[in-house]
Length: 160
Figure 1 (cartoon, rainbow, N blue to C red):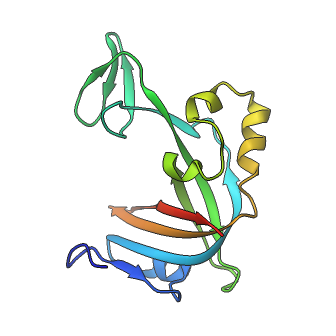
Figure 2: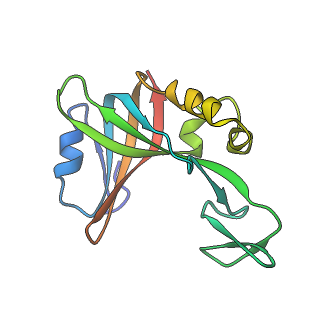
């Protein structure tokens, strides 16, 4: 399924994590059939305050919250998940990739929203995120390169 001539989905059961990393395209989409979550980066920023109109981060200002994307003023943000996980491909030993799971993908694993997660104790948060480890999933990924920095984001996830 092509979305444009420069930004296409690579839909092949043969796509490996190494293919994703080695592709020199700066903005590409990939489908990887079977990977396992082998680690979860537990950091204090597993959630972020998001805009009520879009999904971008908001910053607290003297007059309330302001969206970093379009500058909209808001009384309160919507908290959303942003969790980094390490994927491994058992069929291709040694291939691993850190990716970001967002709010939509975390709903497959966590029964409560990010605002509730923020009110858990540190131990409860760590325990909640550790349940992701060992889960086999199918993912659609985007790769975005800006200068020397490359990020990998999960846009769709299916628990196998």
